[in-house]
Image (cartoon, rainbow, N blue to C red):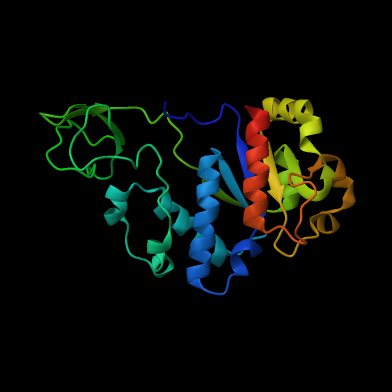
Length: 246
């Protein structure tokens, strides 16, 4: 069964220092890949980068665009120095990425400029997405892109997020989310949720104000390390939220 997008958005907001404090393009690429995989695994709709500068936002956007492009269409992407370490990006393995080297009935492929990553397909028009219906003749038809296809990236500030999104905060000072499952699920059903994870240097509540303690949750209670890394916090929090929302 192919996964559909969530019926309400589940978004993630992280601070740009998660990327900017990495010293090299190699590190930035590897950690972006870890983050992207987590977003896809839990069907995240939007990634907000808080307090980003144009350079970081541009880099992350290019890496995400490359990651979310099916392998058979990556040749359509113009080379850019920001993609110099793109070979380090893990496969995202979305439904539109998992295809054969020959036509297979039921296979769904994305297209670009009439290229679907396979020769001799019989397609009447240059569709955005196709479904192969005959492996012998190579016939394919237009098919709606209805399955989960990744996330979009946006710049934001915390003040902007709190105005337009239904946010919850990951914090070691927060409440146990399992004790507030009904509250979290109700909030999600109203208008979706945006999870905010603090910067690598920590101290998020000190940064934004302790008045947000009521919407803060500790997704890793009794942690045995002095500091939880951003990527660890993201995966842990999304795993718990995924359980609650299902």
